[in-house]
Amino acid sequence: MGLLLKGGRLLNLETGSLESLDVLVEGSTISRIANSIEADGHEVVGLDGLTILPGFIDMHVHLRQPGFEGKETIATGTRAAARGGYTKVACMPNTRPVLDTPEQMKYVYEVTAREGSCTVLPYGAITKGELGEELTDIAGLRSAGAVAITDDGVGVQSSSLMREAMRIAASLDVPVVIHSEDEDLAKDGCMNEGVVSQRLGLPGIPGLAESAMIARDILLAQETGAHLHVCHISDAWSVELVRWAKSMGLRVTTEVTPHHLLLTESIIDATDGEDANMKVNPPLRAERDRLACLNGLLDGTIDMIATDHAPHTPEEKQRPFRTAPFGFVGLEFAFSVLYTELVEKSGSLPLHELVKKFATNPAEVFNLSGGRVVEGGIADITVVDLEAERVVAPDEFYSKGRNTPFAGQKAKGWTVLTVNEGRITYQA
Ligand SMILES: NC(=O)N[C@@H](CC(=O)O)C(=O)O
Ligand SMILES: [Zn+2]
Image 1: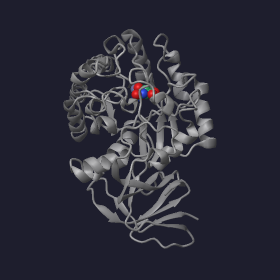
Image 2: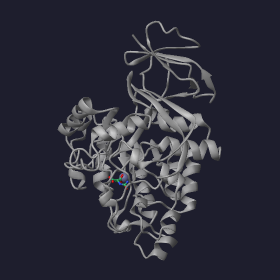
Image 3: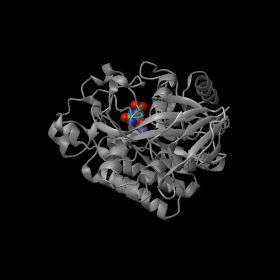
């Protein structure tokens, strides 16, 4: 007995056309794709007017377990992911304790097997406790299933330690994923350094705190041969550096968030710096940075979209802008807001190019299954309704986090069905 997705339109990732095709899932595999497949005792899901896409993959998610279960858990975060059309998420190691040992990798896999609603790929930390002092057992982390290594949440300040990490990572073919932030330049900033931070009298984080660190790490990647992946790129010069690295043939990839593509520091200006739901790291920047990110996405410099889903409690986000924690949630509406703004409204990106950034490219860059709906492939599938319009409604989130500046925004392109390895994980 299979699962038959009948009457939908399958997106052709090469041509961008929507083709009326039925998709049969048997076990965890897509067994057949054809014009019309007989029901034949299969469980049938009718998909008239709906669009079939590969399951989304988010390489930057904070699931907060262990240690910060008040913000999110593997159970709630993966339910939110499934609701947003994700079939795989990679979870960040800035938990308590930090995910810095093979045992911690095992822990994430075990909890996910019991309680997860999508595949979870844990990152292992680069340094013990993300303290930037001593390297972790990178080979041990890899054997225990770490998808890559990162100290996300903080930058690795020591250049010699990063050089050693990249040497080891290169020899093991483990990607090095960087939160690029020079702490000396970022100091105690809470928003982008510029005219708005000046007007509000808030301490700023210059774009240079990001780009200078990216420049260092590109050079280290060049020397060591490591695969460098730059997290949540946000600054115009950062995009330029990654573009240059790619033109030199280096193994450098990057991701951008929905908020850095669609928002700027102007929303903090408009609310006089009084709403910490607009506080994130890297900070929302100037319009020229936003446009540089958008252009980088369009010309292939930026490989993929990642949400940087970073849930915090409402109490934490009610604190003053200076002291509230950084971070936005994103899993449950990332595709919808980007589809609406970039595909529907401005037409700057065709649907199939957006879908590649959500599924195909992360799969290829990190060598994962999925990313395409093909016969014989893994049955990771997302079905969306491109017509229905709804608002981003934090009250309805499956995530424990409510912290998003997109609250109340109208969008189309909502997930109606998510299938992970042949199992329905979300159905509207
Ligand atoms: N992005 C954020 O603003 N916050 C993240 C850390 C991170 O991804 O750098 C978090 O863990 O809360
Ligand atoms: Zn980060």
